[in-house]
Amino acid sequence: MTKVILEVNGKKVSKDVPDHTILSVFLRDNLNLTGTHVGCDTSQCGACVVHVDGKSIKSCSTLAADVNGSKVTTIEGLVSDGKMHPMQEAFKKMHGLQCGFCTPGMVMSAIKLVENNPKLTDKDIRKGLEGNICRCTGYHNIVKSIKQAATVMGSN
Image (cartoon, rainbow, N blue to C red; front, side, top):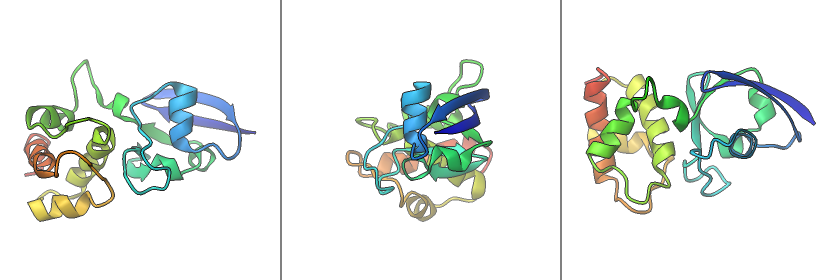
């Protein structure tokens, strides 16, 4: 067993978990934060993306013990004062989702993509999302959503 101490969505948490517990399981099963989805368990689909110490990571291939002491933000942690993050609003407004399974990971990846690149083109967005798979949309409205959010986030 390993004691994992994290700040998750602004709250300190401490749990004893088996050494092999992956971060997505820790979040979902121990903290009941089920917005982080697991679609593949092989780091291929990106549905499990969360932010750890300000970086996007795939939580299905990260041990919870390896991020001990870190600050973690999940899709649930994006809401501020009852308002959705501009990226979440843009996905809603621009119809960037269909079934919604990939959406939390897409949103989390897209936020960091916009924060790290102030002048995104469609090609930049598509390249930046290569680690995220959507089986429904064809990505057209996802790209439009990210471009919309980038304008609101002050990047474009």
